[in-house]
Structures are given as C-alpha cells and as structure tokens.
Image 1 (cartoon, rainbow, N blue to C red):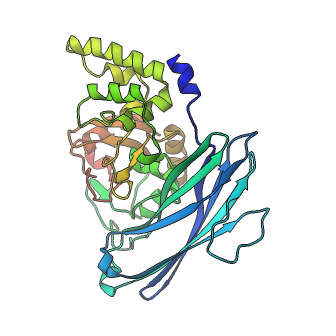
Image 2: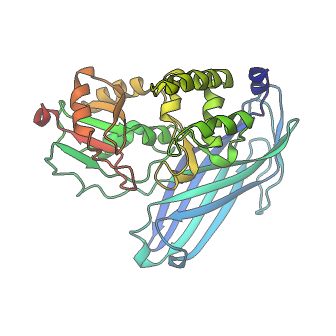
Image 3: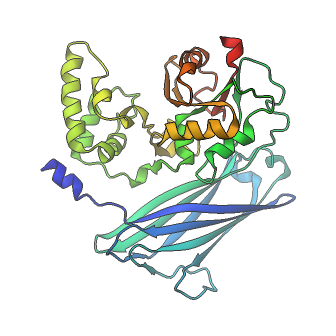
Length: 367
C-alpha cells in the first residue's frame, strides 16, 4: 500500500531548463539575457502556467553596492502573439510540447563591487495549474561570471594543485569547464579530478528544498540518522525515497538498524542505493546552492572516458570530505586509484567556499 501510494504521488508535469545566455558589459552597467525552456512531460495532459516571476540575486556583494537592477520577462510562446507589456498572461502548454521565456536582467553597481561579484542567481517562482489542482514551483540557476585564469595555476608546479573556477551551473558544459581551467603545462600522465557535487550541479541535478513535499515516512525515518547526515532531515530523506522508492528505504532502514545494534554501521547506505551516500542536503554546497538538495552525478564513467579522450589527461570524479575519506566514483584509469586517494586524503579542495572544484594531481611526482 505504501508503494502504491508513492506511485500516485503528485509529480511535476512541467520542467524548466536554462538553454543559453549572453552577457553585455558597459563600464559598471551589466546586462544578462538568458533563454529558458519549459516542457510539458505529460503525453495527454494540458497544463496552464498562470504566473512566472524572477527574483535576481547578485551573490558576493551587498545591497548598498547595487545602484539599480531591472528585470524583464518576455514569453516566447510558439503559438501566441508577441506580448508588448510586462503582464504575464496565463498560458496553456499542450501535452508533450515546449515553450520558451526570455529573461533580461540589467543592473548597475558601484566600481568597488565589480570584482566582488561571484555570480548572478535567478530565483524563479512559477505556478502550474491543471487536473491535479494548482501548486507553486521553485527553480533557480546561475548565470556564470567567468574569472580571469591568465594568472591562475598557469605556472604551478606543485604535485597537488587545487584549481579555482567561477561558480559553476547548469549552463556550463562539464568537459568545457575542465578544458578552460586546466593548466597549459598538463601532461598525459597527470590526473584532473572534479568533485561529484559540482559535476551534478552542471548536470542540473539539484532540487530547491521548497519543491520537496515530505510525508510521514520520511519524517519518521530521518530521526534515526546522525544530525550531520544529509538524510537527517525530512526533505533529504524524502528525496532519497523519491529516487529509490519507499519499500527499499524502509527495508534498508530496518536491516541497517538491526546491524547497527550489533555495532556494524553503514549497512543502510549499502542497501538503500548509491544516492544514499551522494545526496547533499541544504547548506552542504557552496552558495547559491546552499538552499538546494544536490543529488549525485549521473553517467560518471562515461564522462571520465570522454573527458580523458578529449583533453588527453586522466580524469576522475571524486567525493572527498574533511575526515580524510576519499571515494572515487569513476575514473578512466583504475591504475590511478591509490594515487588519487593518497593525494586527496588531506582534502586540498576544501569543503567551504574556496571555489576549487578541480584538483590537478601530478602522478609522476607522487609515484
């Protein structure tokens, strides 16, 4: 009955995805123009969009450093006339169809704030209306603010080099980011690692906590986990339940509890699925993703093989924490496993706001 009830849970019929953006800078005046796609995943259901609002947030500077900020939303519906005003007219999105929205953000800031901006975050609040009733949906994404890498890591010769990047987002291409930020003096024997959360974010695998509707099961089970665990909150646990299913999570919790009674820990994480270990709850990721639940990345092995071939360097996706635990999700070369673990035990990338999702390991110097 629990599984049947879960299968009939309210799911989002519409999904929003950023497609492209461009940036225009004139002194202290900045303008971002981005295009987002809204797609109806249902095959036989028409869904209405009664409202669409955007709240832009400049991350890294204070309010008194912003002279002005203006937002313009232009619906680009394929079957409707172009709108000449700022009013959002309710729109019917037909089954299996897409529509587009252009978002223009123009802002002016003080000269002292120009170098302090980390990124522009678009917090989008919109609504869905249809046979299921009505509900609000929250989405957000980063408009990248690329940093000058001409003097960063260009001449580093250390055996382990954390590499700083801009705040990554779903508009970034993972392999393109590795190519843009890897030092020019890399050797084919070197290893370039990327954190699992930054890769997942670039794949769009994060959820606004306001979109997660926890039930009684998640609110009960989460209380059995350590307070620092990403599964110790109802929303974090509900996210896992939505992925693995309630039956698997409940059985894993029961069996894990029995083994824990006898002093054997970690059984739940082995039984509940890979995402049980990889989910990061809110505050677990650098702002502005600190209010999002970040899932583990997908297709990591394919990514490593493709990136290694494209960049002519070894690539690995890793999960590292301050306790010295190093988990290698995937790598193009299994022979590098011990070198990677030894190099990353001290967590050179950090777990705070260092903005160093990449680490270059010179394997010849560590062999």
